[in-house]
Image (cartoon, rainbow, N blue to C red; front, side, top):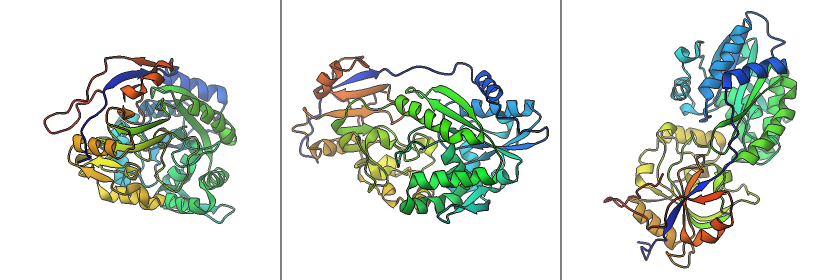
Length: 422
């Protein structure tokens, strides 16, 4: 269909990242709470709402269970709330199911999980944006905000995705997320998130923030506790570390990028925009972003539960991906975030062979054999990737890359689908 079927020879690479990781999570959390004195406001019998989000944070069940243990040890009565805006289809049951998938259940945590979409308006920002907080969290004596700190997929700043965002979008549930995303169009993400978080801190008892940073291998590399008044300063410092740790594709431009799978458990936008160089909100520019002419996405993760938010960033997808889409949560997510372009269905083919043929032939590559091709499992797991022969010179110049097999042709099964090398 694309005019030719010649594909470049490819080779598998191993990419090396900083491997620093937390060896004992329960001990680290215990030490953090002790040394930071974040629990000085806690009295025996106080209730504490612990936030649990919808992202696939490594070791999140262990982290939350350890925090539960430490709070109980101090005489508190902790419980868990799903803090995830409109995710889980925007329903209390759906959000419980998301937590269950991550191993966060009442049995495994030893405390209640209180899921509701009901919120309380606690104030408004300087721009008169109403601020909402999960009803169960608001009624608790304190709130413990837990989240991974990482670069945001929609904007750049010294505060992006982390504790501050969780206080806004997570605690705001579907109602709050809808208001904040609409306000983002006028005032910008950074201004809205930071101002909403300040209103939350002024009107709720934020006992602590627990910031998590991961290394390039998706391992927990750092956990830090912070008091309410320290959150902005400490989150800024952790974001710098998270940005330096972020796993990226080690080639700034290519003709074709193949992504095995996308999904909400991988990124809020299905694929990390910092990795693919595109944003779901297509009108938002990205500075110093990688340039990939054609992005071909092969499948949707089971853990995404049919939510294909971000599919619009791809150029080409497979029919098996499209058939897995549950349009209700996908559209809820898109409408809440006001990013309708992020759920447009790209050009769709029945097989990988057809899709790849069109990707190569429309990419601007001089020929199929000369095509600069990169193939990754997803935008989180980038320690292994497959690249074409035309990138050999750049491979040899990068001390963080190691060739782990021989150059060979792409292999397809009887249905015309790639035989995965991951």
